[in-house]
Length: 102
Image 1 (tube, rainbow, N blue to C red):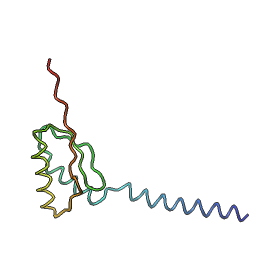
Image 2 (cartoon, rainbow, N blue to C red; image 1 turned 180 degrees about the vertical axis):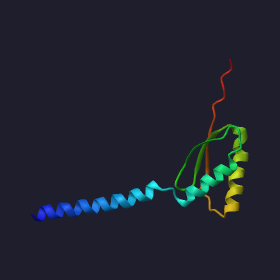
Image 3 (tube, rainbow, N blue to C red; image 1 turned 135 degrees about the vertical axis):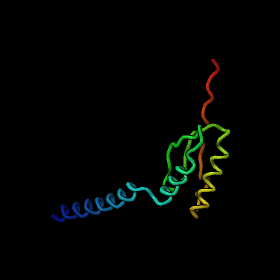
Image 4 (tube, rainbow, N blue to C red; image 1 turned 90 degrees about the vertical axis):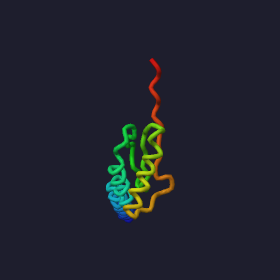
């Protein structure tokens, strides 16, 4: 009988920790919310496409090399307006592949 009580207690504790972790993961962090606001403000570049936003606020995009600098500058300007602290390497850009010549 003691073993059954012990098993129930362990499962209850594990269930509580999963619920607490799940609720933290399910919602966006404030850094993510701010990063999404920065993305929306800077979403005017032709080739820059959003991949994802980490909970740290790091923005992953794909785009052409010629727009990378201006996009990153826009992100930094928006962060300054927000008073936000940016993560290290706040923008991660994967370069678009150039179309192959026909």
